Length: 269
View 1 (cartoon, rainbow, N blue to C red):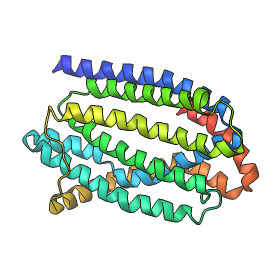
View 2: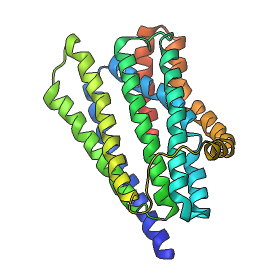
View 3: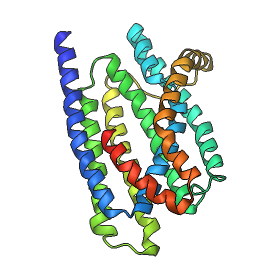
View 4: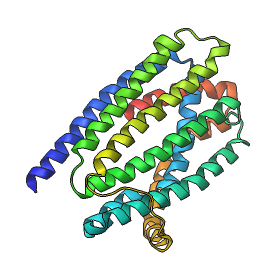
């Protein structure tokens, strides 16, 4: 048991170190490549979607780890219903996020709405990936997920480098939108690689598939709701600042303000 705890802890520490280094390269590359207006839009969309994503998360990672740890023989049933519950919540919440964005100045442009849709797909893969990792965590086998997290970040880094140095090394007004959208797609492809690698490994522990036991899903929803509300309020506290700046200031000034504000906050994060 001690050996398992040590190996899991060390793997997660190393994963965090490597991803922090990769993130520094990503931040440096993006801030040099993107104009202040583009970097503002990039951070604005991520902060906006992250609030809605946590509504679909509901803190189910902790709940699923606890439930599987208590009843490992029913791990497939638990994880299958957790994934289904998250997916159902995601459908309603992403619909709501796009609907609200249509009425928000600066969020209802064509590029912003396309980007919100792409990142919403990113969010569902992130939620499913979290579910799969909770299964590994329950069986204390997170070394593989730590490795795949780094792999996903590397894929993300390489794809963004491809946009910056190959596809759109010099963008004009016409290629501005496509460069921005491809950067968003790079994040989506990175999490997809991470998810499918984890899914392959997790299926060796227990069969992972969507299950719709509505009574059990209601039970999961009820027990996760208090924790989910607490997490949501915490995320709102840390993410709502960018949204407030974008709505209170005139859009031309807000572009620069958010770009300058987001960079040091991203480094701290």
